[in-house]
Image 1: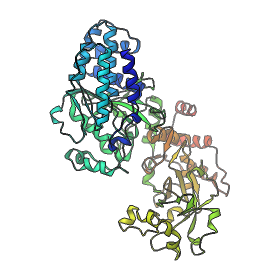
Image 2: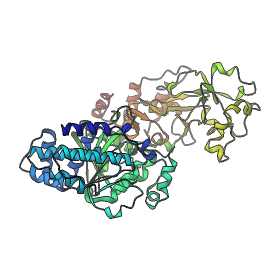
Image 3: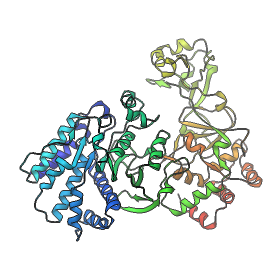
Image 4: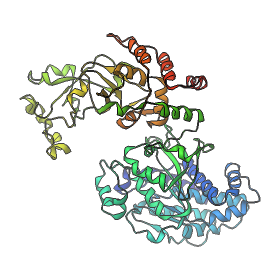
Length: 583
């Protein structure tokens, strides 16, 4: 019965809604479900054994998967129970308690009658920090319940449980102390949390590692490095966005040069936290340099190994390509390309209005039926305003029910202030207005008007496929659309470039070498600029261009475009056959 009470208490306290956390963690703390918690413990231990006791790896795997013990079991148990374990943002302790539960299961498997090791682990081997007193109290309550469930008579002395912000506390006495650091640190962006970030940025530790657009959990990686032993392992469950995020360049460089990534379970689009939308990954980092990265599937089985050097591209973005044929194809693209898109074309982001609509009414963006009510002097400033859902392969849907008031510096109708006056307080609160960059009635970031006029390629910020559409008219859009314009250095027409970028090969490139959010491609400026371009012959350019003209733009089917692109890159029949089997 005591064990059932512990389990019920753990289920209750494990959910974030039961924990009255401090505002610091309120938007970023999530309960770690049992399955990923077990995956994290398994990956951490396996990597520790690979470094320190590789002959114990089969023994641990046999126990973990099938509860089978062998001649190494007692030695392995004694090793694991002696490890020093840390969680820097423990919440109510789900991860470290999962580790203790694993050790209890191990002790039962080897018929160890005494559970005195539980007390020693909770008092001396496991160290936890959390900023929430409520969470720390629940962790203590869970530890006591677990102890009673296994017959501990003495009270547990919580000598290594701290209600502190571990990032700003002086933990130097703990430097190079821990064998394992486990964590599911809070996911908080700087936007909307500047006060939290400022506290860290004012410290020596925070100012050293801060970078713009970073996530708060990056700091826990840096802090963990200082506290980890030279042969230890850090294992975290976090967002996977830092693999390619622009705001994680310093972090990726740190991982590349100093804190080596050694195993990964990337959940991709799979939901790990129920309704909490996060694209997550579990990974291990170690100070000991490694040449191999072990890749796990969603069931936490190691399915492949990749070379550490193949994980990072030239800009140190991280890509995990386990399929050798895909790696070969993408490497050939880079080697045979004439250069990247940014060398020959300009890439621009769309408009940021600051307030499109409010309470169903137009502010800067109006529906067709609302336009008639606008003053006549305002109407010449209306421009067709498209949504990113209008963009398909090659083309976009020809009409839009929306218009935007394109109000820029020194270009505004006389009635604009009275028209927008009901929203003045909101518009004045924008950063650019406060800083004197914009008048309160102007668009926040109107961009240069010529971006939206004349020939251009339009790209949705996120899409299921490589949707690149050509447009030669007026096409105004928000910041969730990017625009590619030609320059004096462009190597072929925008029409030809449109054909090229819609080829199947470029979906493959953007899937494995671009940025992704779950199953969606992220077609931001950085991944667009880094797209390699084929060195097309005049004949190939003419063939593509000949099939892209007229008002209806009768284009070649993508499969025929593919053949031209394959030829330009010199792919072999074997490589082409393989690509044609891909979705």
